[in-house]
Length: 590
Ligand code: FES
Ligand SMILES: [Fe+2]
Image 1 (spheres, helix red, strand yellow):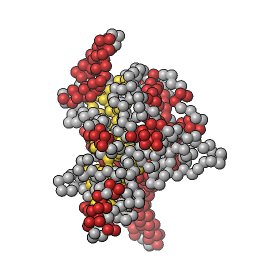
Image 2 (cartoon, rainbow, N blue to C red; image 1 turned 60 degrees about the vertical axis):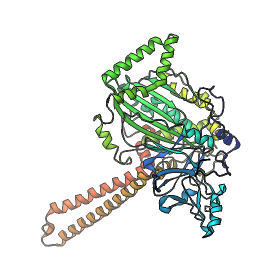
Image 3 (spheres, protein in one colour; image 1 turned 90 degrees about the vertical axis):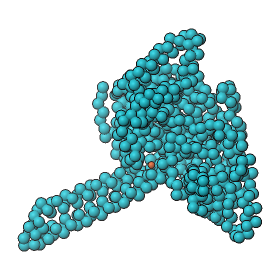
Image 4 (cartoon, rainbow, N blue to C red; image 1 turned 30 degrees about the vertical axis):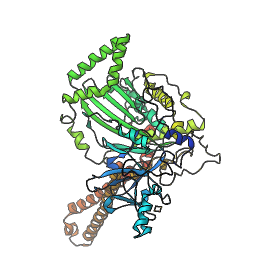
C-alpha cells in the first residue's frame, strides 16, 4: 500500500452502505477491456473520471457537499502544506466516528485539515485521521486511534482539466491503478477560444434525457421558438451512426437544422459515459465548438455542463478536409478504403485540430475572437439567462413523468427522420451499458404516483440534496424553476453575485426613496415659500430631482427583477414570456 494512503476496512469504498447489492457488484466488477464484446459485463460507471464541478464554482474557504453517481461526497481545497501545492480533495461525506456529514465541517490547521463539526475529529487529504480532541494530550492513545483503518475516510483520486474538477470514484487498489493510467477526456479543442466559463446546473431530469437532448439538435427551433424561429427550421440531412462502441463511443456527422446553418458540417461525438463534443463548421471555415458533460446524480436527477468556443480553419485546411472526405467516400465501397476510413475515424478530429493548431490557424492568439476572451472574464450571471434550460428541463420532466406513469421506454419512440439518428444511437449505447440497472442497481424507474391517487408524496429531496428524483411525484413549478436548487447553491460565483446584486438593489431602493423624499420636500418648500418655485431653484431643478427619483425607482425595480430571475426563481419570467410558447415574441413566418 502506498505510503500515506488511508484505507477504511468498513464500509469498503466498493460496498457503500447506502446502495443495493447489485449496485455494489456493478461497482466492484472491472469494466470489460476495450474491444471486448459490447455488453460482456456490467458497465463500470465508477471507473471513469466523473466531473465534480467547474473549478470556478467551488469555494476554497469551506467544504462543499456534492452527490455524484448516487454517492454523497465532500469537496474541499487543501491549502499549501510544505512542499505540497494546494489541491482539491474529494472524500466520502461521512465521518468515521458517528457518520456525521463532513461537508458541515470546517477547515483547520491553516486549511490543511478537514474537521468534523460534530466532535472535531480532523482528517488530511488522504482521509487519514490526524486528531481526536476527546483523547486530549494522551499522544499514545491518539496515535493508536488515528492509525486505525476504522478512523479513515475514503479519499478519491482527482484531476483538474479544462477548468473542471474530476474524481475517480473507485478507491480500491485496482481502481487507483486504472485512474493513474488514464486522464479525463479533452472537452474543447486546444485551438478553440472559449466563449465564457462553464454553465452548470443540477436538474430534475434523468441522465438518459440529457444525453438524448445532447444528440437532438433539431429540437432547438421548436422548443426554443422565440430565441430561435420555428419557421426557419429545415429537414436535417445526416449520415448513419455506425460502430457504436461501449467504451470508445461513436460519432455522427450531419448538416444544419435551420436556414441559417443548413450548409454547415456538424460533428457530434459521444465520449462515454459523460461527454458530448459538438463542432459546427460553416462553409466560411469558422467552427463553433460545444462541450457538454452529463452526470447522473441520483435516479431522475443529473448535472449538465455546457461550454462553447470558436475557432477558424484556413482555406487550405478546408481543402484538405474536403479531399479526405472525397477519398473516404470513394473508398467506402471497398474493403481497403473501409479500413482507411476506419483509421481516419479512429484518429478523429483531434488530428485535424492538432494540425490546425500547429499551423496557428485561428484560435488562441489568432486575434479573431478577442471579444469572447473579454466576455469570458465577466461573471456568468451577468449574461446567462436560464430560459433555454427552463424549457429543456420542464419538457423533459413532463416526458419522463408520462413515460414512468405509463411504463414506457425508448421502444415506444417513433424515430423516423435523419434528425433522430443521434437519439437512436444514444439509446443503443444506453442499452449496451445496461443503463439504468448497471448504475442504480436494478432500480427501474418506479411508476410515478398519479395525482389524486392518494399516493402522491411531498417532493422532498434527501437531506442536503436537491430534487427528490425517482420515484416522487411531479415537481411544482417553483421547485422546477428554483435558481437556488439548480445552480446558486452549487456556484460560489453566483453566491457572491447574489450578495453584490442585493447590495446594489438595496442601495438603488434607498437612493430612490431619498430622491423621492427630496422632490417632495422641495415641492413643499416651493408651495409654502412666497417666492414659489424660485425658492428651490426653479421648476427645472424640481423636475430634475423628481425625474432622478423616478429613474432610480425604475432601476431598483429592474434590479430586483434581475436578482429574482438570476438567483431566486424563474417562475415570474416563465409566466411573463408564456413558457414554451414565448407569447411575448412574434416570429416571422417563412
Ligand atoms: S461524528 Fe464526526 S467527530 Fe463525531
Ligand atoms: Fe453561477
